[in-house]
Image: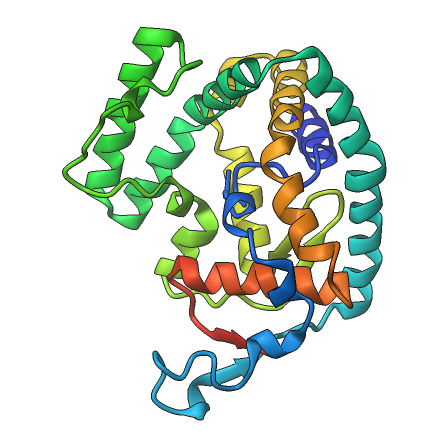
Length: 266
C-alpha cells in the first residue's frame, strides 16, 4: 500500500520525475517558430542519417483519443494550477535555494542511475556516479554539485541516459506507441515501463519511511518546475496544435538521445 500511495502522489507531481530525471525537459527547448508546424518533421529530415525511406516509420499514435484527453488535463494542471503556485513559491525563495534542492534531488537519485549503468554495462558511468555521490554528499550533503565544479572527467557524463527506458532500448526493445501518462506527461510504452521501474528502484524509498519520503519527493519535484515550464511553454504556446507539437518534440528528443529502435517521422 505505501508503494501504491507513493506512485499515485509521485504522478501528481506532474511531469517532473526522474525518468523523463530526464531529463527531457531541459532538452525540449525548441524555437516556437519551428514547432508551430508539423512540416518541421518532413520526409527529408533524417535523410543524412538513413540511407532509404524504407527505414522511416510514422509516429505510432495508437492511443490518440486517450493521449489527447490526458494531454488537456495535464496541460490544465501544469499551467493553471502548478505554474501559479510555483510563481508564488518563487517569490518567497531565491534561485540559490531552489538550485540547492535540485542538486539534492539529483544526488539521491544516484543509486537508481548506478543500477541502470550496471544494467547497460557502462562501467565508466557506474564509477562516475559513485565518485560524484561521494564528493557531493561529503562536501555539501548533496545540496551543491561540487563534483561538477572545474571537473574534466575522463569519460563524458551522461546521466540523462541512466534510466530504465534507455536500458530497455539498449537491450533492443522498441519504444512502442506514444503514450501520455496521466498527471505525468509524454512518454511511450517502453518509457512508461521504464518510468515505473525507476520509481520502484529508488533505494532511498526503501530506507526512509514512505510518509517521509513521499512529501519530500513531491516538494523536490515541485521545486524543479522552473526547469520544465519554460521549454514546455516554448513548445506549446505558439503551436497550432499543442498536442501534436509536444508529441513531435518529445519523440524527436527521444530519437536524438539514442538509442532508439525505430525513427519517428510525421
